[in-house]
Amino acid sequence: MSLKTLQEIVAETKASLHCLTPEAAKALMSEHSDALVIDVREPGEVAEKRPAGTVNIPRGVLEMKITDHTTDPDRTILLHCATGGRAALAAAALEHMGYRNVRVIDCSSDELITHLGAG
Image 1: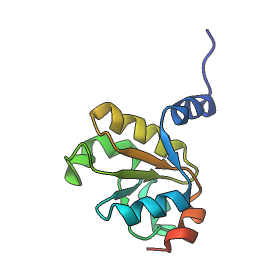
Image 2 (image 1 turned 135 degrees about the horizontal axis):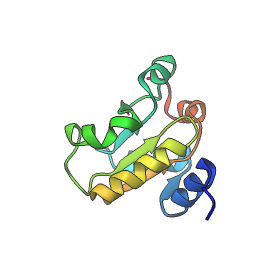
Image 3 (image 1 turned 90 degrees about the vertical axis):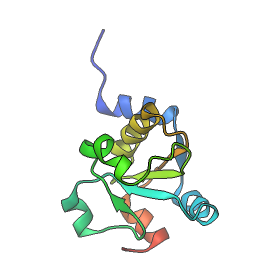
Image 4 (image 1 turned 135 degrees about the vertical axis):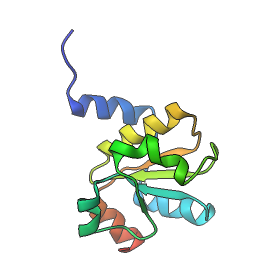
């Protein structure tokens, strides 16, 4: 058995998740005003540019910090990062924890800022 590349792992993970375009994410956020939009990038990345209305919980501490923001397993949670890879891995982790309404905004941070504005 050969080792999988990160790109292969991310592609497999995304195939099992609900991935959204920025337009679809914005529409979903309009329908669910309590949606939690999490930026899983590192604080230094977020300091440079941050989409409006997002909460920063870095991927490395997500499982430890998510309950500070929600303990409702049915709350709509949207995740994004710089390219979608960390967000996909984060979404899989949240689903594993029992969150049932998790989606990935599958685009770059710049593209998301174009749709949501800068925060």
